[in-house]
Length: 97
Figure (cartoon, rainbow, N blue to C red):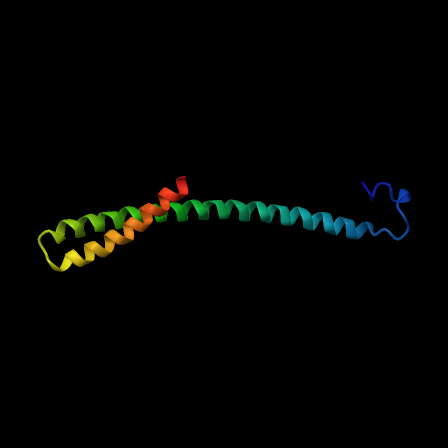
């Protein structure tokens, strides 16, 4: 618009700088969209991996609890894991309040 009507602009107005700024704004907006999309995908992946890790950890905990019934050495480990999972459960309960 400024290039089409230079007569309405003050003599010191830099139309070329406006064009450069506008082009840079477009480029940065495109990059921002790409980064936001990437960030959302990274967040989704992080949540999914965390979920899988938690499921696997719970399975290990179940195996340790079962093994503790027959292997004395696992009883201490099961008790330690029980404390760890109790803390996690307590935090989740507090967050939902």
